[in-house]
Image (cartoon, rainbow, N blue to C red; front, side, top):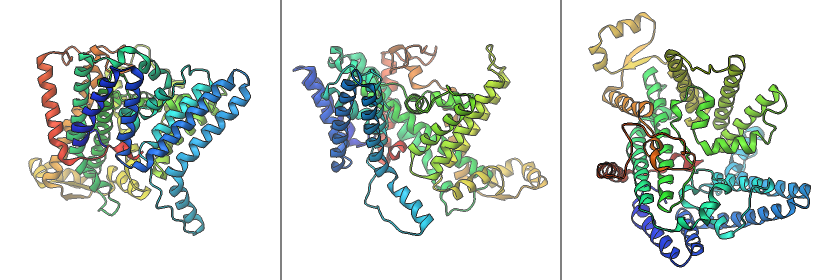
Length: 512
């Protein structure tokens, strides 16, 4: 079931809310159980068969976590063995469903022996709920888990606003909320804040992300004509914007939906394209995944405790794992490795020239911003391309190796442009037409929003929109208040979002 669909908005969500607050009048445990049950229904809407896989995963990991916690006080070594068994089991299940076909395809490529596992379907959200539960197991081993309540644990894993595409939750940040009596009471502020955040997210997804999406596929079609300079950059930037608003929209919708139930999720997206280096980018993009990779992979490998060479090796290995987590394909691994190299270079640069405590000059900041954004866009080409050949074709087009094609209307408006291009030796042709102009006008609008507009949590900062927003200061101008003007603006934004539901599409992160 999709957040951006009529069945969800008109049937599931109203029933889930009514059932939750109705059950809360009987008791908090009943309300939590109802919400967990509703979350299973939400998940089963996609494929009922995989509900049993999810339920089995929950029972297994809850049992292992409780066993680890009981054993840890008496025998830490044995608890570590149980942890290793539990984590390995989770990774084997994830590996079977997500990577079995990828592994066999590569075996076939090397040996020529054909294997067919076409019947294995990737369960929605398996990467997210697997990582969530691995974090729970490790926290239980570290003594950070104090509550073992099966109803609350089941809700923690299945909670539908985060189940399919995150954020990746920590046990410690959710259990106190499930136990708090205030969670199970109706609060007008929660509904006002939650609905506004959800409306913004819906608009981002259905209007902005889905609106730019048609310009992406033609450029990344492996059978298409090699794109010229502006076409290649247009396609790459279109995907850069599509992924931004798609994931940002999902994150807003998840946080807004959760707020309706009185529960705050951690923010997962904080204007990453405003970053001025790659380290900062990863502190802003998919924040909870970055947190997981840092706390449970990078630190698990030793972090920076064994010298600079080991530190950079661990950093690169962590990002390779992060790339593979996103998808079973060598392009994802290469994308992760590329960002690993980016991070190594960034840390090495800071080691040689520590950041100036007084900050960069305006020109230096803008240059760092442009360089970071360009590096990220180049990485997204690998991330989106179906294979290395397509990625190479698009990247070479961005470098101008396939010439330049501009609409006749643009060239006629600037008559010296064709002469200049010809004089530089760049192959020049006419092409694109009105679609070219439409694409670049759309990109100009979207990039202006990305770079200059406050993000959702900044707009809503006065009402703590999510975990991790305590220190945010609302902007002076675009500052949400529970007033009539904002209610009208929210209704208009929601109206545009709902009117665009005729082209329902999955969120991009559903496939990861």
